[in-house]
Length: 156
Image (tube, rainbow, N blue to C red; front, side, top):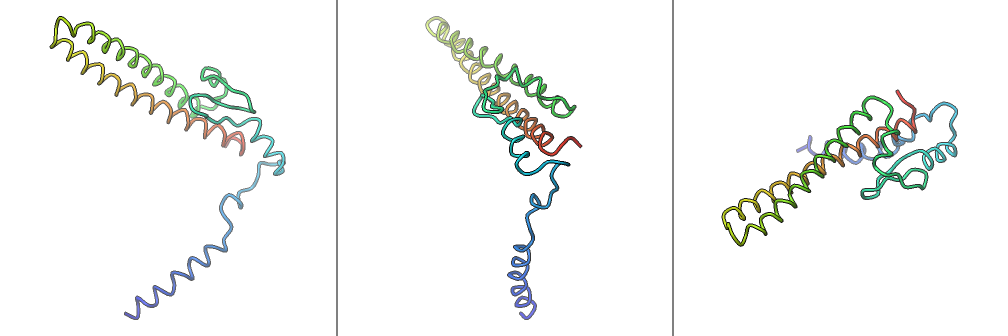
């Protein structure tokens, strides 16, 4: 019981002490020679962020294909290329899914079993397309995050 009271009284003290420590971001040194204002300018003009399926840099919209030139380092370039590949696979699966579903409607009048099979294939292809699209988005977002970190803090 006594040990429990001791632990209970230490918990608020630990939180109080942790509250006095500045956040890690405040302790991180800025890139050599950069002031806070110049860092804000770099952030506003050179970082890229996604807005739905569009990408924005410096207030201007970039199409997905133009992102290719923004990834220079090995890791970000690899992530972008894999994301681009998964995006192409997603689009192919999506188009194939629509073709299968349209084919099932056409076959519905003559071959009921074939129509149902094409519907199942179309739905399966659509789910696969969604999976590849999600993976593509995650990879490109990760590449953008790493690129923006390199732009702001310098490559390591």
